Image (cartoon, rainbow, N blue to C red; front, side, top):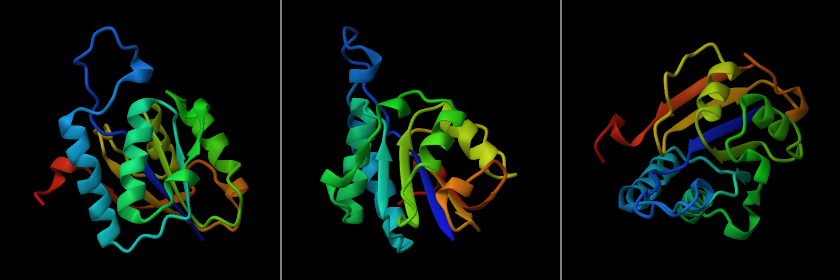
Length: 165
């Protein structure tokens, strides 16, 4: 059995129009939402064994906030440049190369690829994963290489405005 948690980066700042997209930091709402959502995940007693993140500033900042709350070592977040605005096919390829000894993986990434990935992994349809939204899946597979389209069972979908803390 393998478990996958997809997290869209938290809300980013557009305050500095001179910054390129890759370098945008989190805004105040993003800094607030990321730990709130990580706490919701922690309440489900999830133990993340491997974390992947796009190398964009906002995704790394989101991953670090999740890591802190989930007691995941920040220095073990695997930074993957190819996840920056990756397609669902590229994300699937990255996930299929996760070492098999990790049963529970979190991938922090970007839309539209992340929503497309979520929709292609199961029969459940999500119109749009909002910032700091999370989608969790269970796969009846023994090896990440077996991960494929429509092979997942949706466990939950959550996002900051779905309920009040």
